[in-house]
Image (cartoon, rainbow, N blue to C red; front, top):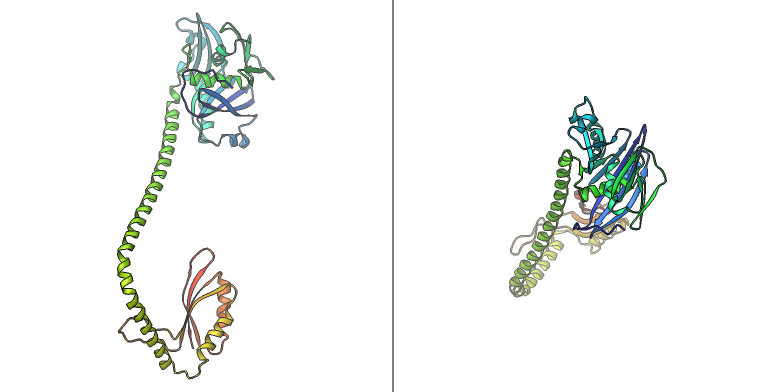
Length: 394
Protein backbone atom coordinates (compact mmCIF):
# COMPACT_ATOMS: atom_id res chain seq x y z
CA UNK A 1 0.00 0.00 0.00
CA UNK A 2 1.14 3.53 -0.69
CA UNK A 3 0.66 4.77 2.85
CA UNK A 4 3.32 7.48 3.26
CA UNK A 5 1.08 10.32 2.16
CA UNK A 6 1.03 13.36 4.43
CA UNK A 7 -1.23 16.26 5.30
CA UNK A 8 -4.45 14.84 3.83
CA UNK A 9 -7.60 14.11 5.81
CA UNK A 10 -10.12 12.69 3.33
CA UNK A 11 -12.30 9.84 4.59
CA UNK A 12 -13.09 7.16 2.08
CA UNK A 13 -13.11 8.97 -1.28
CA UNK A 14 -13.11 6.81 -4.41
CA UNK A 15 -12.01 7.76 -7.91
CA UNK A 16 -11.84 6.40 -11.41
CA UNK A 17 -8.41 7.14 -12.90
CA UNK A 18 -8.49 6.52 -16.65
CA UNK A 19 -5.49 6.48 -18.97
CA UNK A 20 -5.93 6.84 -22.74
CA UNK A 21 -2.95 6.10 -24.98
CA UNK A 22 -3.17 7.03 -28.66
CA UNK A 23 -0.42 5.56 -30.82
CA UNK A 24 -1.41 6.32 -34.38
CA UNK A 25 -4.73 4.56 -34.91
CA UNK A 26 -4.27 2.28 -31.90
CA UNK A 27 -6.11 3.32 -28.72
CA UNK A 28 -5.56 1.73 -25.32
CA UNK A 29 -7.62 2.31 -22.19
CA UNK A 30 -6.36 1.63 -18.68
CA UNK A 31 -8.58 1.99 -15.59
CA UNK A 32 -7.63 2.16 -11.92
CA UNK A 33 -10.32 2.30 -9.25
CA UNK A 34 -8.69 4.06 -6.29
CA UNK A 35 -9.79 4.42 -2.68
CA UNK A 36 -8.10 7.11 -0.59
CA UNK A 37 -8.91 6.67 3.09
CA UNK A 38 -7.12 7.46 6.35
CA UNK A 39 -4.01 8.74 4.53
CA UNK A 40 -3.75 5.49 2.60
CA UNK A 41 -4.09 4.95 -1.13
CA UNK A 42 -5.57 1.62 -2.17
CA UNK A 43 -5.92 0.40 -5.74
CA UNK A 44 -9.18 -1.55 -5.51
CA UNK A 45 -9.39 -2.75 -9.11
CA UNK A 46 -7.61 -2.53 -12.49
CA UNK A 47 -8.88 -3.05 -16.01
CA UNK A 48 -7.32 -2.74 -19.47
CA UNK A 49 -9.05 -2.62 -22.85
CA UNK A 50 -8.27 -1.78 -26.46
CA UNK A 51 -11.76 -0.32 -26.90
CA UNK A 52 -14.08 2.10 -25.15
CA UNK A 53 -16.78 -0.54 -25.51
CA UNK A 54 -19.62 -1.81 -23.38
CA UNK A 55 -17.29 -4.13 -21.47
CA UNK A 56 -15.14 -1.16 -20.46
CA UNK A 57 -18.17 1.00 -19.68
CA UNK A 58 -19.50 -1.73 -17.38
CA UNK A 59 -16.52 -0.98 -15.14
CA UNK A 60 -17.62 2.68 -14.89
CA UNK A 61 -21.10 2.32 -13.41
CA UNK A 62 -20.41 3.85 -9.99
CA UNK A 63 -20.86 7.51 -9.17
CA UNK A 64 -17.13 8.31 -8.85
CA UNK A 65 -15.32 11.40 -10.15
CA UNK A 66 -12.89 10.81 -13.03
CA UNK A 67 -9.21 11.76 -13.18
CA UNK A 68 -8.01 11.49 -16.77
CA UNK A 69 -4.55 11.06 -18.29
CA UNK A 70 -3.98 11.27 -22.05
CA UNK A 71 -0.84 10.58 -24.06
CA UNK A 72 0.25 9.56 -27.54
CA UNK A 73 0.57 10.83 -31.08
CA UNK A 74 -1.61 13.95 -30.68
CA UNK A 75 0.71 15.38 -28.04
CA UNK A 76 4.04 17.20 -28.54
CA UNK A 77 6.66 16.89 -25.77
CA UNK A 78 9.61 19.29 -25.68
CA UNK A 79 12.38 20.49 -23.43
CA UNK A 80 12.89 24.23 -23.85
CA UNK A 81 14.77 27.05 -22.18
CA UNK A 82 12.71 28.98 -19.67
CA UNK A 83 12.66 32.36 -21.38
CA UNK A 84 10.04 34.83 -22.49
CA UNK A 85 7.92 33.70 -25.41
CA UNK A 86 8.90 30.03 -25.31
CA UNK A 87 5.32 28.98 -25.99
CA UNK A 88 5.15 31.13 -29.13
CA UNK A 89 8.43 29.65 -30.32
CA UNK A 90 7.05 26.17 -29.77
CA UNK A 91 3.87 26.62 -31.84
CA UNK A 92 5.08 29.19 -34.34
CA UNK A 93 2.31 30.99 -36.30
CA UNK A 94 -0.49 29.28 -34.35
CA UNK A 95 -3.06 30.67 -31.93
CA UNK A 96 -2.02 29.92 -28.35
CA UNK A 97 -5.69 29.86 -27.30
CA UNK A 98 -6.23 26.72 -29.36
CA UNK A 99 -3.76 24.67 -27.27
CA UNK A 100 -3.36 23.25 -23.77
CA UNK A 101 0.10 23.42 -22.16
CA UNK A 102 1.24 21.03 -19.42
CA UNK A 103 4.60 22.26 -18.05
CA UNK A 104 7.14 21.00 -15.55
CA UNK A 105 9.63 23.71 -14.54
CA UNK A 106 13.07 22.53 -13.51
CA UNK A 107 15.69 25.21 -12.90
CA UNK A 108 16.28 26.98 -16.24
CA UNK A 109 14.45 24.37 -18.25
CA UNK A 110 10.80 23.77 -19.01
CA UNK A 111 9.58 20.30 -19.93
CA UNK A 112 6.40 21.00 -21.80
CA UNK A 113 3.59 18.92 -23.38
CA UNK A 114 1.29 20.56 -25.92
CA UNK A 115 -1.97 19.39 -27.50
CA UNK A 116 -4.93 20.98 -29.18
CA UNK A 117 -7.89 21.76 -26.94
CA UNK A 118 -10.15 20.08 -29.47
CA UNK A 119 -8.44 16.73 -28.82
CA UNK A 120 -9.02 16.99 -25.08
CA UNK A 121 -12.61 18.20 -25.49
CA UNK A 122 -13.43 15.16 -27.63
CA UNK A 123 -12.14 12.77 -24.98
CA UNK A 124 -13.92 14.58 -22.14
CA UNK A 125 -17.18 14.41 -24.08
CA UNK A 126 -16.69 10.67 -24.47
CA UNK A 127 -16.57 10.40 -20.66
CA UNK A 128 -19.44 12.85 -20.14
CA UNK A 129 -21.67 10.86 -22.48
CA UNK A 130 -21.75 8.03 -19.92
CA UNK A 131 -22.76 10.48 -17.15
CA UNK A 132 -19.36 10.75 -15.48
CA UNK A 133 -17.50 13.95 -14.63
CA UNK A 134 -13.83 14.60 -15.39
CA UNK A 135 -12.61 16.70 -12.44
CA UNK A 136 -8.87 16.62 -13.25
CA UNK A 137 -6.72 15.95 -16.28
CA UNK A 138 -3.09 15.53 -17.27
CA UNK A 139 -1.48 14.78 -20.62
CA UNK A 140 1.95 13.99 -21.95
CA UNK A 141 4.98 12.54 -20.23
CA UNK A 142 5.95 15.09 -17.60
CA UNK A 143 3.12 14.43 -15.14
CA UNK A 144 5.33 11.52 -14.00
CA UNK A 145 7.57 14.11 -12.34
CA UNK A 146 5.09 13.85 -9.44
CA UNK A 147 6.56 10.40 -8.73
CA UNK A 148 10.19 11.54 -8.36
CA UNK A 149 10.09 11.69 -4.51
CA UNK A 150 8.84 8.09 -4.16
CA UNK A 151 10.66 6.32 -7.02
CA UNK A 152 14.29 7.15 -6.24
CA UNK A 153 15.55 3.59 -6.76
CA UNK A 154 14.94 3.79 -10.53
CA UNK A 155 17.04 5.69 -13.05
CA UNK A 156 14.20 5.81 -15.57
CA UNK A 157 10.42 5.63 -15.52
CA UNK A 158 8.17 4.89 -18.46
CA UNK A 159 4.63 5.13 -19.75
CA UNK A 160 3.28 3.40 -22.88
CA UNK A 161 4.72 6.16 -25.11
CA UNK A 162 7.51 7.89 -23.14
CA UNK A 163 10.62 7.24 -21.10
CA UNK A 164 12.00 9.73 -18.55
CA UNK A 165 15.62 9.42 -17.45
CA UNK A 166 15.86 10.65 -13.85
CA UNK A 167 18.38 11.19 -11.08
CA UNK A 168 18.36 12.97 -7.74
CA UNK A 169 14.72 14.01 -8.03
CA UNK A 170 15.30 15.60 -11.44
CA UNK A 171 14.55 14.79 -15.06
CA UNK A 172 17.70 14.34 -17.09
CA UNK A 173 16.05 13.72 -20.45
CA UNK A 174 13.08 12.07 -22.10
CA UNK A 175 12.37 9.91 -25.12
CA UNK A 176 9.23 9.44 -27.20
CA UNK A 177 9.52 5.68 -27.17
CA UNK A 178 7.01 2.89 -26.64
CA UNK A 179 7.41 0.64 -23.61
CA UNK A 180 5.75 -2.68 -22.79
CA UNK A 181 5.87 -5.17 -19.93
CA UNK A 182 7.63 -2.82 -17.55
CA UNK A 183 6.88 -3.25 -13.84
CA UNK A 184 7.63 -0.86 -11.00
CA UNK A 185 7.33 -1.61 -7.29
CA UNK A 186 6.35 1.38 -5.15
CA UNK A 187 5.90 0.78 -1.43
CA UNK A 188 4.84 -2.80 -2.11
CA UNK A 189 2.45 -2.06 -5.00
CA UNK A 190 3.32 -3.39 -8.46
CA UNK A 191 2.45 -1.04 -11.31
CA UNK A 192 3.06 -1.48 -15.02
CA UNK A 193 3.92 1.23 -17.55
CA UNK A 194 0.22 1.93 -18.26
CA UNK A 195 -0.65 2.37 -14.58
CA UNK A 196 2.36 4.47 -13.56
CA UNK A 197 1.25 7.75 -15.24
CA UNK A 198 -2.24 7.24 -13.82
CA UNK A 199 -0.82 7.18 -10.30
CA UNK A 200 1.16 10.33 -11.17
CA UNK A 201 -2.00 12.03 -12.43
CA UNK A 202 -3.83 11.12 -9.21
CA UNK A 203 -0.97 12.69 -7.21
CA UNK A 204 -1.16 15.74 -9.45
CA UNK A 205 -4.80 16.16 -8.36
CA UNK A 206 -4.33 15.35 -4.68
CA UNK A 207 -0.98 17.04 -4.10
CA UNK A 208 -0.61 19.95 -6.56
CA UNK A 209 3.05 20.35 -7.50
CA UNK A 210 4.16 24.02 -7.42
CA UNK A 211 6.58 23.47 -10.33
CA UNK A 212 3.87 22.03 -12.59
CA UNK A 213 1.87 24.60 -14.53
CA UNK A 214 -1.41 23.55 -16.16
CA UNK A 215 -4.57 25.65 -16.28
CA UNK A 216 -7.48 23.32 -15.41
CA UNK A 217 -10.04 26.12 -15.21
CA UNK A 218 -11.96 24.58 -18.10
CA UNK A 219 -12.83 21.67 -15.76
CA UNK A 220 -14.37 23.90 -13.07
CA UNK A 221 -17.89 23.45 -14.39
CA UNK A 222 -17.45 19.66 -14.39
CA UNK A 223 -16.17 19.73 -10.80
CA UNK A 224 -19.05 21.95 -9.67
CA UNK A 225 -21.63 19.74 -11.36
CA UNK A 226 -20.15 16.64 -9.73
CA UNK A 227 -20.17 18.32 -6.29
CA UNK A 228 -23.77 19.49 -6.81
CA UNK A 229 -24.86 16.01 -7.89
CA UNK A 230 -23.15 14.46 -4.88
CA UNK A 231 -24.64 17.01 -2.45
CA UNK A 232 -28.07 16.56 -4.03
CA UNK A 233 -27.80 12.80 -3.59
CA UNK A 234 -26.73 13.18 0.05
CA UNK A 235 -29.52 15.70 0.68
CA UNK A 236 -32.00 13.26 -0.86
CA UNK A 237 -30.83 10.48 1.44
CA UNK A 238 -31.14 12.73 4.51
CA UNK A 239 -34.58 13.91 3.35
CA UNK A 240 -35.67 10.29 2.98
CA UNK A 241 -34.35 9.45 6.45
CA UNK A 242 -36.12 12.50 7.89
CA UNK A 243 -39.35 11.43 6.19
CA UNK A 244 -39.19 7.91 7.63
CA UNK A 245 -38.29 9.22 11.10
CA UNK A 246 -41.21 11.67 10.94
CA UNK A 247 -43.51 8.91 9.75
CA UNK A 248 -42.37 6.64 12.56
CA UNK A 249 -42.82 9.40 15.13
CA UNK A 250 -46.31 10.12 13.78
CA UNK A 251 -47.14 6.44 14.01
CA UNK A 252 -46.08 6.24 17.66
CA UNK A 253 -47.88 9.49 18.45
CA UNK A 254 -51.05 8.22 16.82
CA UNK A 255 -50.80 4.98 18.77
CA UNK A 256 -50.44 6.99 21.99
CA UNK A 257 -53.56 9.06 21.34
CA UNK A 258 -55.56 6.04 20.19
CA UNK A 259 -54.64 4.16 23.37
CA UNK A 260 -55.58 7.19 25.46
CA UNK A 261 -58.92 7.45 23.66
CA UNK A 262 -59.53 3.74 24.14
CA UNK A 263 -58.91 4.07 27.87
CA UNK A 264 -61.36 6.96 28.11
CA UNK A 265 -64.03 4.96 26.34
CA UNK A 266 -63.45 1.75 28.27
CA UNK A 267 -65.66 2.65 31.26
CA UNK A 268 -68.52 3.68 28.99
CA UNK A 269 -68.19 0.52 26.92
CA UNK A 270 -68.22 -1.69 30.02
CA UNK A 271 -71.27 0.12 31.41
CA UNK A 272 -73.21 -0.30 28.16
CA UNK A 273 -72.09 -3.83 27.39
CA UNK A 274 -74.72 -5.66 29.47
CA UNK A 275 -77.56 -3.49 28.17
CA UNK A 276 -76.39 -3.90 24.58
CA UNK A 277 -76.16 -7.67 24.92
CA UNK A 278 -79.69 -7.90 26.30
CA UNK A 279 -81.06 -5.67 23.55
CA UNK A 280 -79.18 -7.67 20.94
CA UNK A 281 -80.72 -10.90 22.22
CA UNK A 282 -84.19 -9.37 22.13
CA UNK A 283 -83.70 -8.08 18.61
CA UNK A 284 -82.33 -11.43 17.47
CA UNK A 285 -85.32 -13.24 18.94
CA UNK A 286 -87.75 -10.87 17.22
CA UNK A 287 -85.86 -11.19 13.94
CA UNK A 288 -85.97 -14.96 13.96
CA UNK A 289 -89.67 -14.92 14.83
CA UNK A 290 -90.32 -12.48 12.00
CA UNK A 291 -88.41 -14.63 9.52
CA UNK A 292 -90.44 -17.68 10.46
CA UNK A 293 -93.71 -15.77 10.35
CA UNK A 294 -93.15 -14.05 7.01
CA UNK A 295 -91.33 -16.76 5.10
CA UNK A 296 -94.47 -18.73 4.37
CA UNK A 297 -92.51 -21.94 4.77
CA UNK A 298 -93.93 -24.81 6.79
CA UNK A 299 -91.28 -27.34 5.86
CA UNK A 300 -88.63 -27.34 8.59
CA UNK A 301 -85.96 -28.53 6.18
CA UNK A 302 -86.63 -25.76 3.65
CA UNK A 303 -83.80 -23.38 4.62
CA UNK A 304 -81.51 -26.30 5.31
CA UNK A 305 -81.95 -27.48 1.72
CA UNK A 306 -80.98 -24.06 0.31
CA UNK A 307 -77.86 -23.84 2.48
CA UNK A 308 -76.91 -27.44 1.75
CA UNK A 309 -77.30 -27.01 -2.02
CA UNK A 310 -75.23 -23.84 -1.97
CA UNK A 311 -72.58 -25.46 0.21
CA UNK A 312 -72.37 -28.53 -2.06
CA UNK A 313 -71.87 -26.30 -5.10
CA UNK A 314 -68.79 -24.51 -3.70
CA UNK A 315 -65.52 -25.12 -5.58
CA UNK A 316 -62.09 -25.36 -3.93
CA UNK A 317 -61.14 -21.83 -5.03
CA UNK A 318 -64.30 -20.30 -3.47
CA UNK A 319 -64.68 -19.34 0.20
CA UNK A 320 -68.11 -18.42 1.61
CA UNK A 321 -68.09 -15.96 4.50
CA UNK A 322 -71.85 -15.43 5.09
CA UNK A 323 -75.15 -16.79 3.75
CA UNK A 324 -78.23 -14.70 4.60
CA UNK A 325 -81.57 -16.37 3.82
CA UNK A 326 -84.37 -13.80 3.53
CA UNK A 327 -82.15 -10.91 4.72
CA UNK A 328 -83.52 -7.63 6.15
CA UNK A 329 -83.93 -4.76 3.71
CA UNK A 330 -81.71 -2.52 5.81
CA UNK A 331 -79.69 -2.58 8.99
CA UNK A 332 -81.82 -3.57 11.96
CA UNK A 333 -82.23 -0.86 14.57
CA UNK A 334 -83.99 -1.03 17.95
CA UNK A 335 -87.64 0.09 18.02
CA UNK A 336 -87.89 0.16 14.20
CA UNK A 337 -90.07 -2.00 11.97
CA UNK A 338 -88.15 -4.82 10.33
CA UNK A 339 -88.83 -5.46 6.63
CA UNK A 340 -87.38 -8.48 4.87
CA UNK A 341 -86.40 -9.27 1.32
CA UNK A 342 -88.72 -12.18 0.79
CA UNK A 343 -87.37 -14.83 -1.57
CA UNK A 344 -83.77 -13.52 -1.50
CA UNK A 345 -80.54 -15.19 -0.36
CA UNK A 346 -77.43 -12.99 -0.01
CA UNK A 347 -73.99 -14.65 -0.15
CA UNK A 348 -70.68 -12.96 0.68
CA UNK A 349 -67.33 -14.61 0.07
CA UNK A 350 -63.97 -14.67 -1.72
CA UNK A 351 -62.66 -16.18 -4.96
CA UNK A 352 -59.02 -16.75 -5.86
CA UNK A 353 -59.60 -16.30 -9.61
CA UNK A 354 -62.24 -15.24 -12.12
CA UNK A 355 -62.52 -18.66 -13.75
CA UNK A 356 -63.42 -20.42 -10.51
CA UNK A 357 -66.02 -17.73 -9.72
CA UNK A 358 -67.67 -18.05 -13.13
CA UNK A 359 -67.72 -21.87 -12.92
CA UNK A 360 -69.35 -21.70 -9.50
CA UNK A 361 -72.08 -19.36 -10.78
CA UNK A 362 -72.83 -21.83 -13.56
CA UNK A 363 -73.27 -24.61 -10.97
CA UNK A 364 -75.64 -22.43 -8.97
CA UNK A 365 -77.70 -21.64 -12.07
CA UNK A 366 -78.27 -25.39 -12.51
CA UNK A 367 -80.15 -25.56 -9.17
CA UNK A 368 -83.87 -25.79 -9.97
CA UNK A 369 -85.07 -23.61 -7.10
CA UNK A 370 -82.92 -20.63 -8.20
CA UNK A 371 -84.73 -18.17 -10.48
CA UNK A 372 -82.04 -15.50 -10.88
CA UNK A 373 -78.51 -14.60 -9.73
CA UNK A 374 -77.32 -10.96 -9.43
CA UNK A 375 -73.70 -9.97 -8.78
CA UNK A 376 -73.83 -6.96 -6.44
CA UNK A 377 -70.06 -6.62 -6.02
CA UNK A 378 -66.85 -8.23 -7.29
CA UNK A 379 -63.66 -6.39 -6.33
CA UNK A 380 -60.02 -7.31 -5.92
CA UNK A 381 -58.95 -7.38 -2.28
CA UNK A 382 -55.35 -8.63 -2.65
CA UNK A 383 -53.20 -9.92 -5.49
CA UNK A 384 -54.71 -13.40 -4.98
CA UNK A 385 -58.28 -12.84 -3.75
CA UNK A 386 -61.43 -11.12 -5.03
CA UNK A 387 -64.34 -10.32 -2.69
CA UNK A 388 -67.88 -10.85 -3.98
CA UNK A 389 -71.51 -10.33 -3.00
CA UNK A 390 -74.26 -12.13 -4.93
CA UNK A 391 -78.03 -12.19 -4.50
CA UNK A 392 -80.12 -15.26 -5.38
CA UNK A 393 -83.81 -14.95 -6.12
CA UNK A 394 -85.76 -18.05 -5.19
